[in-house]
Length: 421
Image (cartoon, rainbow, N blue to C red; front, top):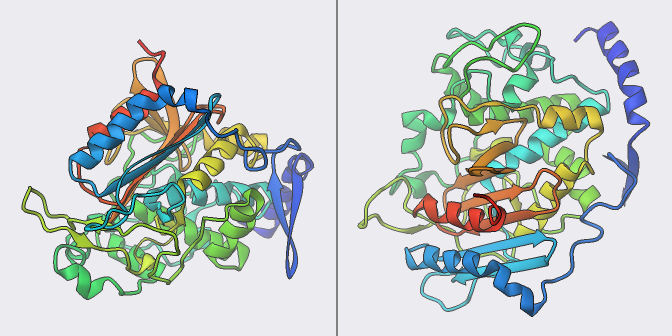
């Protein structure tokens, strides 16, 4: 972006910034955090704890959690916030071979739910006038995306956030996956990757498609979920702010919402306490697949696409606040939810779903939809969903990455689709 264009863009954004509320966090020096309304968000006034008579509302969900454990998952937790209050569900154990139950205070790797945080930070940076989602990758990261048929001048930040860039997903590289399969995991669990390393793995493969250009950027006829998109998005955040990705997330999301159980681990392989042990079959299938303890490993393997750690309560606060409009001004909120079809889908969801910026609109049943994201990383599987206004929200986590997705789907539908046909 030229200096003249940036100046003009900042002038356009100044009126929008007048709508923001400054929340000051005193940590050495004052840090400015923006919110979209003056009203107290869900983090300040969470719903009351559920009364005993309200437990029956969630009985079906609890029975599904029990079944998830009966099918072999070590432990599962869920928290729901709705008009009835806050309900905590749990089944199973923190550690195999022990009887200590899982707790909804557990911290866990949220995997690709990190993407929702990353997209939110970039939208907030746009609101601050530091960048535009229509800026190209070539402008912010010159020389990073190159060769093999890639055209970085045609790939925008928006293309990254809604997975319409066509950039190959480094997790689909056979050599990379082999490093973390079976016994190879222990040899590589502490390997540190730079974001550029991960991008270069992806660029060894040609693009899946070229992003469509024109009057409606980010709306091509093709879509492909790629962690590489969000690694690049994190690199843009660092270039635009001059600070680390972790600092940006802390300044713009964690501190304003008071997410005390949420962290960006950077290079630290350990999970903060309290936490359950994380278990994985490491890409091996079948009843004889060996279950391994994968609690500790270098989070650099996922960077801004999936490294964050949180709790069910914190993720609920974040997603509820985001959809309620407490984090973004109106212009950025509209972009957040401007979704594209999930053509060629990988992961949770169905063919009628659509994907916004770090958020997916899931069709759970006929007439029943919810916004959210799923995430899976060795040893941890997370699902978070919320109603369009953020008043109903649910986050669940399993400390095992195998099992039947249909059971997770059943738990979600039991909460969000009670009145659906």
